[in-house]
Length: 291
Ligand code: PAF
Image: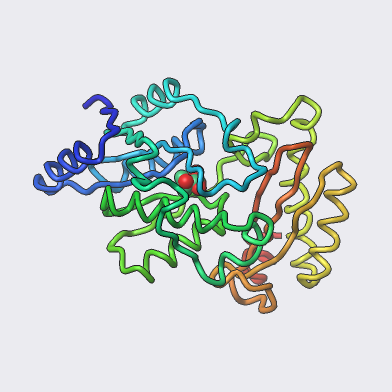
């Protein structure tokens, strides 16, 4: 079947109602468009689990701060639709502002995710995760998918949505998708296109730094030492650092217990471009076995 482009909530509901009536499972892949191979991998993952895939494309104003890149965020709808058509997506849901915010973004009901949103990017981008949770909840309500796929690059976002799904009693399975990287290690992101040639050459140092820090972690350095070393390494490479932190995967608290799953998280800027990345720290015994 060819890709359907749907803007209207009523038309979307009707189409999904028919598919559900035929016993088909529906997956949702929420995006802000400007699709790259990382997004398309989410679509493919969704396709493997469900008969129908809906990809939403909406640059959500409520998750951008006043000095952030909402107006300049890349909008490439025609190319996105072509890419989705080639990757087995059934519906591109492209809602207008009034579909998701009938009373306007300023008058919208707000969702404030507790705790998990207070650290990492939440500390540096106040209100960002309220905006993310609010728009994802609206998309969940409109699409009512069986499954929704989110990438691990935005790991804090993923954890907030996993928790929101339980807390708000959504009957939706959240699937995690691994980070897609360029051959030199740079995590795929729509914002990579803002990098000039020099910044692009420097950008993979973010991932290199996380790899080096993961070795230090396994050699016994604690979370505070990793943080300091990471900030120093990135600053030396030319980044302006927001944070480098080792936190547990479940509650995003600073990592203290090496037996619990943890990740190194980093956010840093090259010029006006903010890059984020993270790396899972495998349990120490597993790491020793592999080295
Ligand atoms: O990860 C993103 O692209 C956005 O935060 C999301 C989940 C589509 C909500 O706008």
